Amino acid sequence: MARIVYAMLMSLDGYIAAPDGDIALPVPEGELHRHFNDMMRQTSFALCGRRMYEVMRFWDSSDREIDAAQVELDFAHAWRETPKIVFSTTLRDVGPNARLVNGDVENVVRSLKSETDGQITVAGADLAAHLARSGLIDEYRLYMHPVVLGGGKPYFQSGLSLTLKPLGTESLSQGVTLLRYASAG
Image (tube, rainbow, N blue to C red; front, top):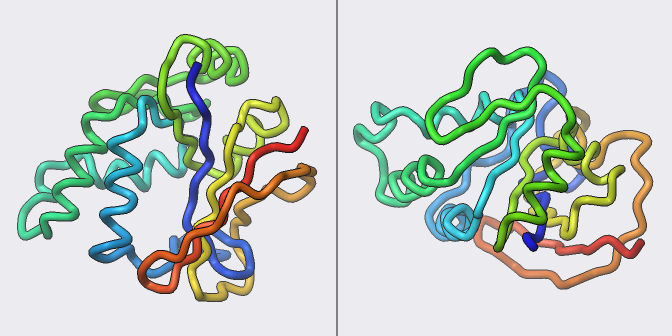
């Protein structure tokens, strides 16, 4: 059975995007980027909400590889090789190695979790909140960037109530601190 991990970069004040929706956090460089490359290579399936998938589609394009740093090329290849399930009621199609699902999120994810080995990652706060309410997230990884956005899209959706237990912390490059938690309930 797979473990489902919700992992996102966030500001010290708890936001994954600025009020205008822009991902206003510093771009991962070198060592931090390699950390995320490794995580993507360890991912058996990536679950994405529509908005996060649209941001990440950036990595689907081979045009992206022109003048790209090796660390970016490595991530692009890992992204393309990882199977994705995109949950959206508005998208009509998705890119390569992705499957579109427009309903029954909980049953699709429960089935995938029971039929898959390894790690399933979740990207997108709304999707993560839905899965958290269903008790499907095994681990929360909060990558705290030393910036304050002052508002925007929170890592934890408003109204979501969870009791978590600490699994550990890790200091990463660019001043990022990884905080890991598991559901206590």
